Length: 159
Image 1: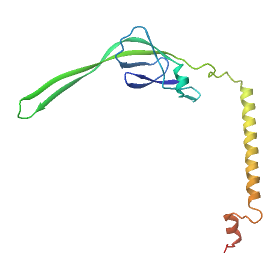
Image 2: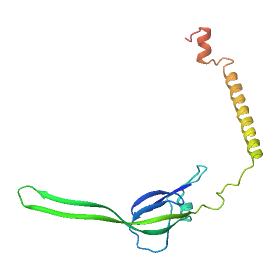
Image 3: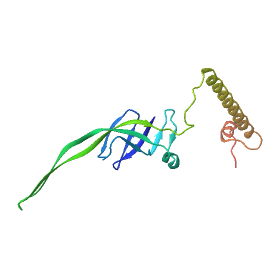
Image 4: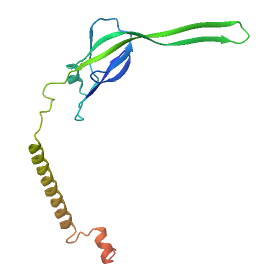
């Protein structure tokens, strides 16, 4: 299961136990984020804004760090214009503790026997649907209505 959260104007894909760097947050202890999207282990997606407003992704602040140094040098030829500066972005390191799921979305464990029974009933339903479709297709070709393939076999042309 993973979630997409927004932090510092950027989005991050997080799972429980991940450690991520986000732009500087001035807080202590735990920080809660409202997810933008949640994907469960079974592949179901929660993207409804009303449902997501009730959920939280709980993270704990691990520490602060800095990004790589960026050197800025501006220069214009023959004018004596030179400007030199540098920048290091400050980051807060977060560890994802918990992604809260809505109640009722958890799947109960299924016994192997129950799973086999449901697979058998699915197969029977598919076979019945296929047989019905085949019967309907054969009844459409009888009478005055002939399909293009049956006309080609007989060699008759409409005209």
